[in-house]
Image (tube, rainbow, N blue to C red):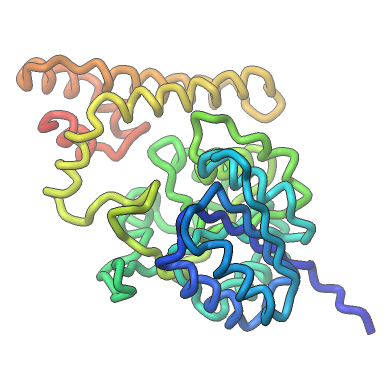
Length: 324
């Protein structure tokens, strides 16, 4: 009797990941349902990453493919490459420095299979650089429940769009997507982080489902390329001051690209949605151009409070912009 279950691929991207990679690989090997293949795309590491993967491949119960990039692609292009090389029906994205719960693949595959959605993402625990638990979850950091009324809202396209217009609540390391939608999410524009772009494309072309169960241990450490902000108000303020207008300019470019995508695909983006994307881009530009004087800045921010409510994190974003 043949197995009719969808086949599973894991797309793992590495770059100088030797410090944390063994723990991640072991958590993949310990899955209640192991993948049908592991595709590792390395972005030019000069540590022991390749040796660690080769050693793991020799004892893995499934094929492990290792691709070494001759030039550094950057995380988003490297993930695009890994996704394109996967042969499974479902593709789970994987960071090099996390750890998975044993039922991660089984749980996400079951949800994706039964829901018919194009993608699914989960909540996650937090841990530090020594693999010690940190209080809270990924969704608490992004205030997903508080801001958007709960994970069930993500089943609704308008609610999912509303959430993504405020901020990206989808962490790539918790995602699983249907390979049949690969051509819809690729290529990933250079300006976008891969998980943000993939989330938008899946919501526009299909549906995203949110799983409230924490299925990964997401590592917070100083050397990660893209990470969550600190948990305290002080650390968030410090990060806001460090990024300043640069981060908003980047976000403005991202939503400019999404704006152009919507204009080119009116069958996916109705006029109202295109207007919302434009307003999000305009708010990013506004935040990048705030005056130096805090009093003048506050007056302008207060005058745009409705935009902050719809296209950012409301009063928290207003306060952050006032104080940065």
